Amino acid sequence: LLLGAGLIGCEFANDLSSGGYQLDVVAPCEQVMPGLLHPAAAKAVQAGLEGLGVRFHLGPVLASLKKAGEGLEAHLSDGEVIPCDLVVSAVGLRPRTELAFAAGLAVNRGIVVDRSLRTSH
Image 1: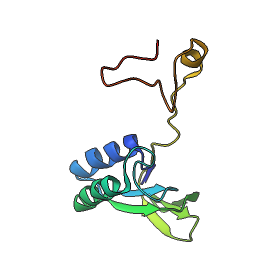
Image 2 (image 1 turned 180 degrees about the horizontal axis):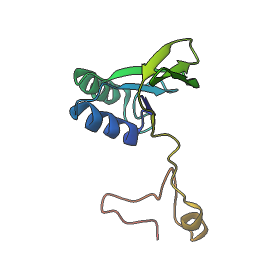
Image 3 (image 1 turned 60 degrees about the vertical axis):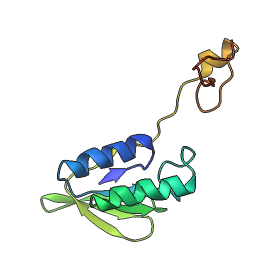
């Protein structure tokens, strides 16, 4: 089970599924890589990962995780239960931009740069 469908979560999903792991991805968003990709591009990324066998559960969140025999059961907020052996978390990545902002750089979910990767100063 993989928690998170952002950039890191999708990269993990690609690597793990390519390595032969069966994978369910749970994320509280409406699309993969929200805020990073146009919805059409997100659908293409999701379809590519689904082609590798990845199953997506977009919308619900992990409500609880319980031991079940030798494995685990992931109980989602929508009532679905997903049996799994391992849980990998790829959630909550936020750039720390306080120092850049204090130095006068333009920030917006990271340090703003132009096409040549130059900052505002």
